[in-house]
Length: 185
Length: 311
Image (cartoon, rainbow over all chains, first blue to last red; front, side, top):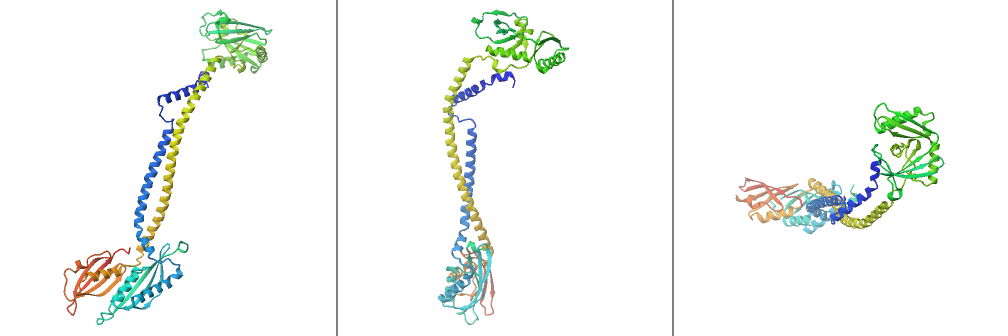
């Protein structure tokens, strides 16, 4: 450092402090230097986070509404370990048939069909003969109770043209089972 | 300027004298002044009588700048000296034009002079060998390229410096609480914004977690819908049909396959409004209706219905 500059060095703290004092006197309500930028950055961050939060809330709200059917399905579906599904289905079907007063001629083997992680559909065929009243009672029982039965196929017809009061029912039913996470594999 | 010349003779005796004059104008006069009435001098020169001293007159071949001239002079002096140049301290004086008076004093002599100055507690700005200080004016123009030890430099403006430090301290004492107040205001505002931001960040984390779970649920729902598990609304559909179909009509065949239902309706007479009669409901929409006449003259309507979404 040259001799000329070195002579001015002791003056620098006083000059800096005097400038600071002058600034404080002129702008008593002003913020400290450089702090405005920090606060502004923080406010921008808050605004961005707020906007993002609002957007996510909207999306989640829409998703929740879209998922109401899934919730209804879950409530009306089975939630059993795999080995307990078949006996439960047969028992439920036999109960529905007994309540409606009809006789089920045959029930096929129950097929398991995994359709999503943690969800499987169990499908089986039934065959029965019944009157119109018994059929109505059976259909109501199967679609209204728990678990809910879905008709993959259903064929109702009179066994012969001369016996319209008797009906022949052949159908394939499926039931959803939402398994616990631990056994989802 | 006012300057003091302190003469230190070979016997270490001191004689001081104050002058007024300038080192710039060579022609300007230098006058003696009363030391008591004049106050503090601007410069103090210590003129010392030294042994083992060599003096040369060197004329540079051309005019050179101060720094270049100093380097050339030192080279010339090194060539002229009979001793190692490292063992001497050197001084020079510009005598006008390209002429310089250069003097070299052995370091031992300089040390002796400095010891004597220390004994007498002398403070001075420049040490000049008496060989170059024939007159006060020449002494004032003599330069010493090597700096003097700091302990011999006089301390000037003591009161001003003390006053400066006191005012600086006062300024610091006043400004510190003011700046601290402003900092606290900033800090409080920053803390408030920061806590709000953290609250938003926590909300965002929760919403993102929810979004991940809901997206997984949406995927699950889509997969279930695409799997074609069947139609649960057969009973309500049959209820709607039995309500809407006229009593003269019979459903003679009903088949469901996936989301599609085919039914055959038998009637003794034609009905041009059957399409509208069956219509749509919450559980179905009508796709097509065909009409045939049977062998026994009955009208057979073949109706195709589409079941609405399973849920």
